[in-house]
Amino acid sequence: MNPPTPDFEAKLCRTEDLAIRILALPRPLVFTNGCFDIPHRGHVTYLAQARALGASLLVAVNSDASVRRLGKGAERPVNPLEDRMALLAALSSVSLVTCFDEDTPLQLIRVCRPDILVKGGDWPIDKIVGAREVLALGGKVISIPFIHQRSTTALLEKIRSL
Image (cartoon, rainbow, N blue to C red; front, side, top):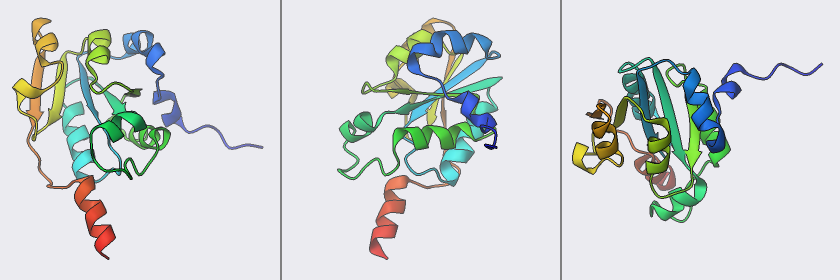
């Protein structure tokens, strides 16, 4: 007998199914995005804070090709997209996880029309992709200050120096 599929697998959403799947999410809907290559304390704290701003949290993850285009290094991402998405879906703060292959998540933001758009504290509100669209719909855009100064890049540098 095979073990049952983990519950978090149901939180994984193909991009083409997003418009339908978000209809089942309670509002207000919070949207955030990122690479989330090697999840760390900063990531999980940020995601918990983002989720606390609304009734559900949608996380959009950069595809592997999109991460490489960001210039984070030839070896990035370390973890493939499917693994990064699954780890995020396993978090209780996350309601739904999808991905995008474009350089920005603007198309996804237009599709899901979040009530609250969130990025980490290193993003000023005027530089957050989709801010104009969310604000025009009467939503909020929030840059959450970092509590834990962590980064995947710094973690990889530390590992390489050992």
